Amino acid sequence: WWRIWNADLACKNKKNHNVVNIHDIEQQEILRSQEIIKSKILDSGDVESYNQVYQNYLKKGKTNEMLIYSLIMANEFKNEKATFDVFEILYLTGHYKNKDCYDYNLDCLDEDTKELAIHYLKLAINRGSYGASSVLLTFYDENKYYPIKELYNDTVLIKKAKKNIIVK
Image (cartoon, rainbow, N blue to C red; front, side):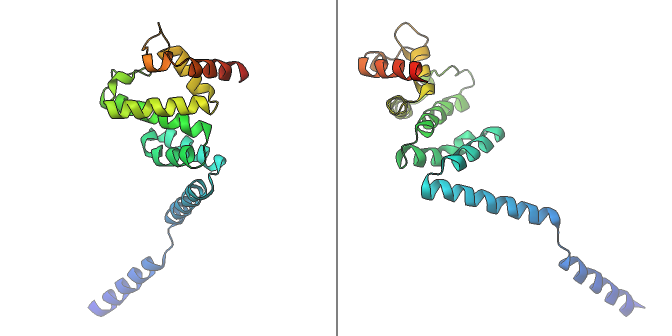
C-alpha cells in the first residue's frame, strides 16, 4: 500500500512540474515586450516607445525610475519632451523628500539638483518646449511665485519662452 501511494504521489508531483501556468507565460511576455520597448528607446531614441514607457511609469507613480530613459532621450537624441521630463523628474525629487514642496518650488531641492533642474529647464525651452516655457513664465519669472533671477534676467530665454507659447 505504501509503495502504491508513494508512486501515485510521485506521478502527481511529476505532472505538476509539467503544468504550464498561463499567468507566468503572460508575465514573461509582458516583461519581454517591455524590454524590447526600452531597448528601442536606448538604441534608437524611439519617441513612441519613450512615451509608452513614460505613461506606464506615470500610472505606477514611479516617474523617478524614468530618469535614465529621459536623460538618454534628452542628451543623446535631443528630444524636447524628454528634456522637460528630466526637469520635472528632478523637481519631483524635492517633492518626494518634502510633501510641502509643490508648484515647481525649486527651493526644496539641494543646490546641485536645483542647478541641474534649471539647466534642463533652459535646455527644454531652447528646444521649443511649450511645457517648460509655461513653467518659466508662470512660476519663475519676475514677480511670480518663485522668481529665479538667473532665469528672469535672461532676456533671450524669456523671449524664446514667449515665442514657444505663441507658436504652440
